[in-house]
Length: 222
Image (cartoon, rainbow, N blue to C red):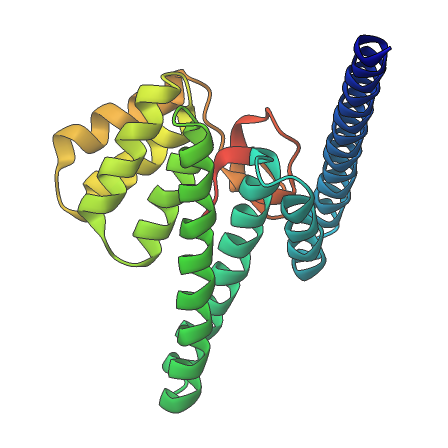
């Protein structure tokens, strides 16, 4: 009798364990699905140029699934765009002699660039081969005037994605900033051979981030 009761107890314990495991898997799957849904909402907001809404959606997606690299990248991209907008506004204010206002706006640009870089770094921790994350880091470095950092980031992008024309284009432009004409010419020619198309040539008014994934100018972040 004692053995029978022990057997029943063991079976019950096993059943409870299996049920709890199944429930846990169900919750994890539900969280992943919700994260994907929120990421899609963020992507839709990007298409509409609604950057703050995109950030909100991507943030919620990350909270649901902290391993969602698409959400991290999306948020990083959105923050890079808002950083660029603040950057241009700061330059305009400075040009008009509004020094105090320019500094205030520039601080917002610096904040968004730092957040973009933070998210890109988070992507690389999850997926060290993420070329797009390296690309974002390169764009942030350009806006910060860190030419060596930009060269390193774009070179890392090319290591991970040897056929990304935009990476060659951007690295070539940075070489131009530091007067390295030989490498500038080589990279710009390589970008052209790979099919790089500038926004002006594409006759497209929207920001690069509003493009669908997979198009060449989609990776052109600045």
